[in-house]
Image (cartoon, rainbow, N blue to C red):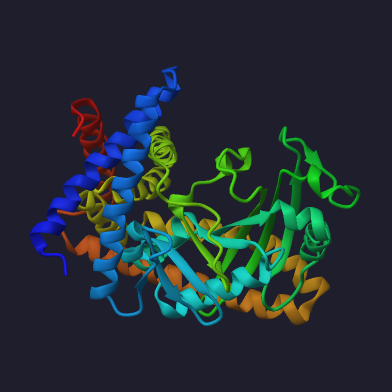
Length: 395
């Protein structure tokens, strides 16, 4: 077993390694030419990250019931849900959905995936469900091996079938497909699966204690090809692959991909903290976790759990579902009416929570909801400052 002293040393190494990833990514963006020295730096970082994340995963699995380290894929931990295994990046594990919620989410994922030979991943802020407790929507990203698409042509048939889904498990409200240039294609008339660069499916789905909008971003990819352009449409570090098999569509240890993700998160935080502070805070939480700044991440969670901003966003998201469900009540009352009742229960629960939080804030003379929002921004500023200083100083 690794000692506390060794673990602290690994934490320092981890921060330095992530800073190295950010610096390498920025160097390649600035036009630095690839050289043997640069390639050696990438491989050195890859090996270091594998050693550190592999050790972290083993420590976490040894200390936490229900988790096991994935020895074949360093940095991943494995959780077993009701009908599937889930591989979770180490840095997401402490905030990941608990058993009942995870069972709901994996069952939903299996219901809305296109083909069984792929891997559908829980993505984005839903991976922080246990910490945030309230989410606006649920995002999935599904990787489909292009060899399967070409050999059996199931993708278009399945996309068309999913676009007509009306069931107690999920109700599809939209399906779009795009070519490699981002131009929309007609799902009804496109016949060549090779023409589909990505697809996006939108659903309304009931969970055990919630009703949410769920999306599935479908990406056909070439297995074993890290330069596949479709891979730039998402980030492995914010995804937890769900499958009954062993295929993991993306590795965690690519230093340039890590640097690109960390830089994207920083730009998202800066770009959204004036227009959408709650989204900026969620991006900041991801940034804190991937860069090893646990103190800032924990602070963001504490503020989000006590303030009302997260619930207000969730209520807006649930209200946006009403028009589609009302149409369903008219056309399919057997599906629409139970869904509307479930949505009303969810809305009442969220309104009850927002009332309780406002009451608790009012009782604390030193703390108002506006001050909570200011605290969010202050924490984000400190996080960005610490990362920038690390990049500047190389540590």
